[in-house]
Length: 174
Image (cartoon, rainbow, N blue to C red; front, side, top):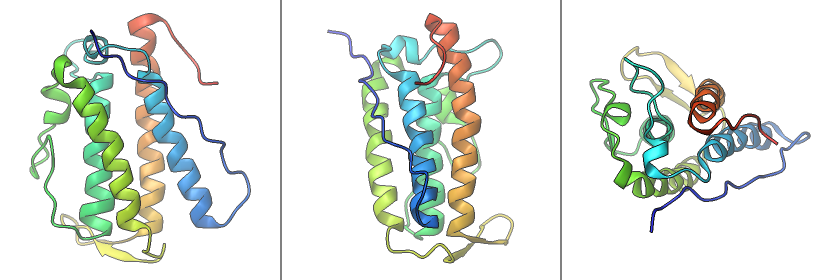
């Protein structure tokens, strides 16, 4: 039996609330849009690349966002001593380059697990919690990290729109 990405969750977007709740709601929406763009596709479809020479695929985006979640929330904000799953600290994008259709189910599950672990890692940190970026030495707040992650999902959800349309013509978000 061929695995297909399951139906994506659809949370109600928070329109009124405190700052933390609003930021988390927007982040959740970005996460869910990426999952929605993947739903119903096989591992082979998820690994379909956009156009040469790009290595971008929906599976690559899932793997990339697993790394991004892990890097910003766990490594930087929470200070956990965790490594990357697909890439190296040197910035090599193995998350895009080394996608294997037969591992799509495991990569998808890893993404969902990472979201849960990341949310727990920052749950007790205030938005004003600051960390120093390891490469630039710049201080960043957890608030900025939330905003950056919302921006990151916005950019990559746009890529996912185009990739999904190329695969089967599906467009939009309802």
